[in-house]
Length: 287
Ligand SMILES: N[C@@H](CCC(=O)N[C@@H](CS)C(=O)NCC(=O)O)C(=O)O
Image (cartoon, rainbow, N blue to C red; front, side, top):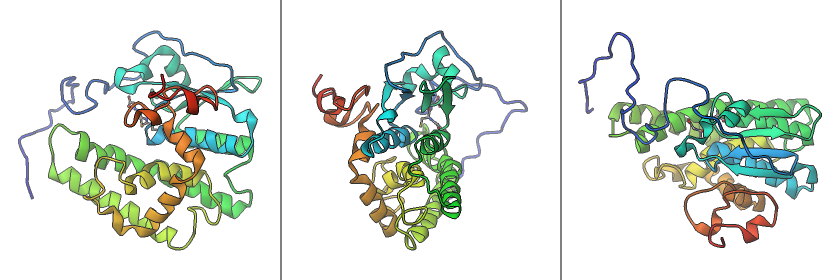
């Protein structure tokens, strides 16, 4: 194994703002707003402040699925938060999510407008509010929530661990890449074994657990994350792959993926979403 042993931690860690890496310019060891900036508010009951990362698309997919089911009260405005430009540190955004991370949601449909942050909490909030994509039977509901929380606890090893060291760190380091590739593959095997037994993660129905897990692990096996499909041999997880393709084909998933997207094919980028017709008229190839 390649070993780099030229670093000895100092007695007390100090912030080195110039430490390189993909997110060096936005990472900092303190919380709170860096500047005053109010958030825009549109006309719909829900105001979403987000970006089409895996955590972001969980919520836009959920909204599009709810609207596809006919829940007109799930209409939403999706505003773009450019995390590479520090929008998550504006005072308005920090008011909705003190953790300064997308996605963040305001529900104005109730007497006391309510903020919801953390993508898993947002999925659960919407599922309970509309009584959809969450089983009502107690055992099935518990299974669904176990997998939802599994995703929330597991994905940081995939994103913050594997993805960071494989794709974003300023140079390649064998030890962390090995450690997090092993954990990511173990997690894929957990899913592959589960999906060998059931059609959807929580059982026979498509739920918020599928939406959350697909956003990370489904997109990983579809080759959309970190350019790592070959390295992780994602084709060896055939049950995950078939499930991922099934979900990928859902029209609401395809729409949800477009919202707040700022990279790739221009016809699939809808920077802001304020109306269902925006998908036909406001993608980046048309404006
Ligand atoms: N556990 C959080 C994670 C959210 C998260 O990490 N968001 C990232 C983008 S995927 C972000 O906003 N990063 C900006 C930053 O770290 O400053 C959730 O699921 O909502």
